[in-house]
Image 1 (cartoon, helix red, strand yellow):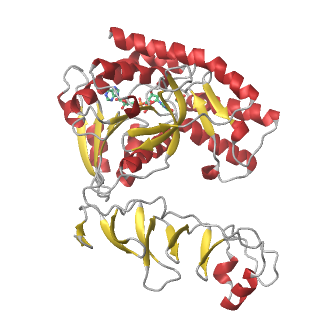
Image 2 (cartoon, helix red, strand yellow; image 1 turned 90 degrees about the horizontal axis):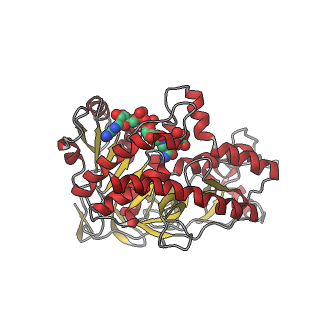
Length: 456
Ligand SMILES: NC(=O)C1=CN([C@@H]2O[C@H](COP(=O)(O)OP(=O)(O)OC[C@H]3O[C@@H](n4cnc5c(N)ncnc54)[C@H](O)[C@@H]3O)[C@@H](O)[C@H]2O)C=CC1
Ligand SMILES: O=C([O-])CC(=O)C(=O)O
C-alpha cells in the first residue's frame, strides 16, 4: 500500500505523522496516536504511548493537559477538592473539572513538567527497503520446559509477517500444532529432529535456513544437588550439533545460548563457529537476563518499588561463584551492608532455589522463557533499527581490557548484534574485589568450553 510516495512492506501500516509526514511503521512496536491536544493530528508513537501537541508520551505515567505533558499523581491527593479514591492509579486530572485544571497549574510542585521524547531517537522508516521488518527466529529445544513458553511469547510478540521455526528431537509436532492456532501473524515452521540418529540433520538443516536469530534452550536441566557445570558434557554435545548447522546454513545469524553451563557452552560455540570459519564475536550471546530479572524483582520487593523500573546490572558469569550483582550503583536506591549481603546471595542462589523447589522436575522454565523472550525481542527490535537497547549478556570480551575473553557485561544491541560493549557499571571496593576474584573462575569455565570444542 502507498504511504505518501513509498510503498510499505506487507507487515507495515501507514501513519500521517504530524512532524515526519507519511511513514510506514511496524504495528507490533508503534501505533498512530491521535493527538490529545491538536485536533485531527496524529503522531507515530511507541505502542501504549499517547501524543500531546505532537510529542509522544508514556500514557501510563503522564497526561496531556492543555498541550503539556504532566506527571500523573499516584498518591492520595492532599487537596480537599479532589474526591479521594483508593486506586493506586487514581489521577485527579482525569476527574477534575476543567476549571480546576488552571488552579492545579499554579501549584508548582504538583506536577513535574517532564516528558519523554521519542521523536529525536525515532528513525522514521520511510523507505520500504530500509529495514528487515520481518525476521526468522529459531527456537532449538522448542518442546522443552523453557522452549514451549518461550515459543509462545515469540509467537505472540514477533513482528507481524515473521517466521518462528521450532526444532526439537521430541514432541515438537504437537507443540507446533498447538501454537499454530494462535491468531497472530507469525508463521510457524516445525521440525522434528532424528533422536535415534543425530547425524541425520535433514530437519535441523531446514530449521536453520535463512535465520536472523537462533535461540538455544536445548539441553538437560539440573536436578537437586547438581551444579550447572555437571551439565556440560551432555549439553556441550547438543549445542555443538545445533551451532554447526546454524554455521552452515545461516552464518550471519545471531545466536543466543540459554543452555547451561552458559559460562562454558558459549565459548565452546565460539570455537565451533571459528572452526566453521564464520565466527563473528558480535553475533554470539550467552543469555544471563534471568539474573537481571531476578535482581529487579528482589530489589523491587525489598524496597517497595516497581521491579520493572529497577535499574540494576548483574555482570560476571551465570553461576553463584561468578555472578556479580552491582548493588552499589542501583540508581536511586541504597542498601545497608546486611541488605547487600542477603540480596546478593538470593540473586546468586535463585536458580538453585527453583531446582530444589521443583524437586527433581527441572529448573527455572517460565521465568527463563520470560527473560529469554525479553532478550530475543530486544535483539529483533535492534535488527529493525531501534537503538538504545542495553542488556547485560555473556559475550566475547577479548576486544576489551577486562583481561578475560568472555564475561557478562552491559551490551548495546544493534543491527549487527553487538553495537557496543559499554564500560562496566561503577563499583565499590568490595565489588571490584569480587570481580577480580571471579575472573579466574570464569576463565576456567571458558577453558573447559574451548578444550571440548577443539577436540570435538
Ligand atoms: N541461562 C539461563 O539463565 C538458564 C538456563 N537454563 C538451561 O536451559 C536448558 C533447558 O532447560 P529446560 O527447558 O528446563 O529443559 P527441558 O529438558 O525441559 O527441555 C530441553 C529440551 O531440549 C531438547 N533437546 C535435547 N537435545 C536436543 C537437540 N539435540 N536438539 C534440539 N533439542 C534438543 C529436549 O528434547 C527438550 O525438549 C538447561 O540446560 C538449563 O540448565 C535453565 C534456566 C535458566
Ligand atoms: O539453576 C539452573 O540450573 C537453571 C539456571 O541457570 C537458573 O535458573 O538460573
